[in-house]
Length: 223
Image (tube, rainbow, N blue to C red; front, top):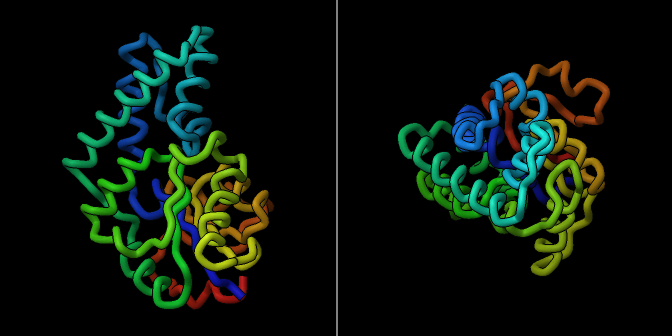
């Protein structure tokens, strides 16, 4: 029986991958590196910022020092926050689903976003008090598809009250997220916010939804 639900953030609660793409493109452009929208959605969506910049510089055969990397991550965060300040869109049905799920399960967020970005969006959306634990990019050394973030979420739950991995359900929108959740021993529901349902066929998703609209938290009870 499901006891906890762990939500990815970007593309699951907030529909902001376009803003992340634009912010990454803008910062890379200043470094004379071009990133197309198609490249972003094919190879960068689901990665944390640090991994994304490392990958972009590697593909451009450019050297990336820790000092430069830290500066780029900070710059992207500033651009992203400026963009979502102008337009914040939640995934359809997310608010209602989170409230419904909170009455049945323990809730958490497991995201490759920076903590300050999560905090800003949760505050603006009014969902800030709904989650028992939050694991952000700042909290783990390895990003999805590594299971580190999901294992950290389970450990955070366990500090309060034990929960088994197979009693946790993840909700994701990317292939790295799905792989991370499954590697942590958790069932995973996929949202087609950014990819068609066929993307996740045969990859171990428990359910595939086009959004939260028309779905209830009760559907997760026996996953």
